[in-house]
Amino acid sequence: MGSFLSQQSAEALARLVRLDGEESAPPLERMRAIRAVQHHLDADPAALSSVRDALAGGSGWPEIAEAAGLKPTAAKWRWQGTDDEIAARLSAGRKRSIRPSSVPTDLPGRSVAEAAAQLGVSVQAVYLQVTRGRLISRTVELADGRSYKRVFLPGDALPSTAETPAHSLDDSPEDPTSTDR
Image 1 (cartoon, helix red, strand yellow):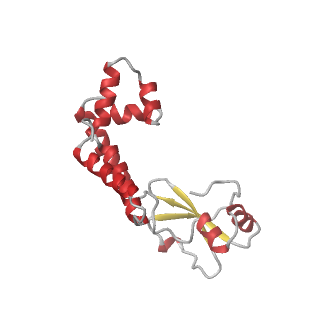
Image 2 (image 1 turned 135 degrees about the vertical axis):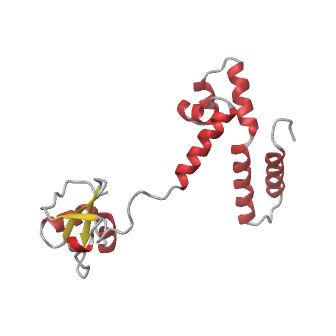
Image 3 (image 1 turned 90 degrees about the vertical axis):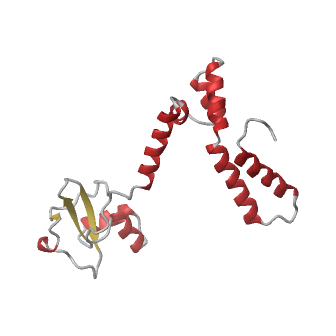
């Protein structure tokens, strides 16, 4: 192949070209080969080298972003700076992406969206049923100040304040226009 792709990218691309020539190539193998090419090209040093050459040649971030199919801010985030700065940014991004959700999973009842899905109705319909008194809801406030609207369907146990020491339950009337978190 050419002289600017890494060996892994070139091999993945050659495999894809080989499969493209086979009429009986299994569909899942084709998909794996496509994903492998995407993966290797995304991590290929040739992209960073091309960006640095373009910058040295007088191209700006808007042109580089357009060529890469990105917005200028995304292109800068991906390729601007030294190798160490880029590696630190990518590492921090990976750490954020594997961090678990900050929404607690041990809250009583169900979120408005979960209740809507369970009942087969819209979120607005759940709020309307709460306003009309057909469903019970509570706002659960965590010790750190975050609050979550929770809905209790028929048959769900209503928690008492003593059962949820980490949570504070607000029994105030519900506002059907507030957002569910």
